[in-house]
Image (tube, rainbow, N blue to C red; front, side, top):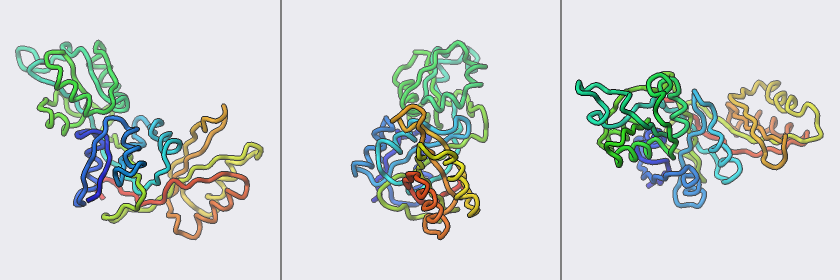
Length: 288
C-alpha cells in the first residue's frame, strides 16, 4: 500500500490527494504543518507528499517553494490541478437570527489558512468587515477550532468535506472571489508515480545565473526559444545567500527523455549557469 503525506483531513490538499489517488490503494497520513508533510517523505516515513504550490488568485506559495528548493531534496513525481472553492462554515443555529437566516453581525472571528483567506478577500470585506481574521495552519484546522468552541461567534473558511466531518453547517457556499479558482499541486517522492495516464509531460529546473555574465538570463531563454521548447512558468526567488542574488524556477513542457531538452540544459551550463533538475514528471489536468 502506498503511503501519502498531506495537510489535514478535509483540507483542499486532502481532497486533491484523494482525486489523484482515486482507484489506487493508498493510505493517507495527515499533518498540521507543511514542514511535517515535507519531512515525512524526505525521511522515508511515507512514499509521497502532496504540496500545494500555486493558486489562480494568489499565485505561487512562496513558503512551499522555498521548502522544495532549500530544505529537502525530493524530486517532483507528478503535478495536477484541483478546484479550490471555499465556503463559510459554522453553526447556523448560533449565528442566525430568529428567522433562521444567517446574521453576519453575529460572526466575531473568521479563521482559515492565509492562502484560503486571501482567496475570499472581497467577500470578507463586503460581509464581515467587523470580524477579526485569524490565520491557522490549514482550512480543516480552522473548522475543527470552530467545532471545539461553540457559542463563540466564530466561523471558518474551508471545504464542504471538513464541515461534514465536524458536524458543522455551510453558512455560505462559494465565498471565493472568483469561480475559476484552482490550485496546482505537486507530488514529491523518491519513486515515479504510476497508475494514471498523463495529459502531458513536464520538467522543472532550477537555474542560478553566473554573476559576471551580462545578459545571462537572455541566453538561458534563448537556449529554449530557438529549439521551440515551451516554458509554462518562470519565477525568480532569492538564493538567501546574498542580497540581489536570485535563482530561477522554470517549468518546461517537455520530458527530460526527449532529445532537445538535455541539449538546451547543456548549453545553459556552458555559459556558467548552475542547473538543478527538480523533476521530470507526468502532468494531469482536472477531469482528465
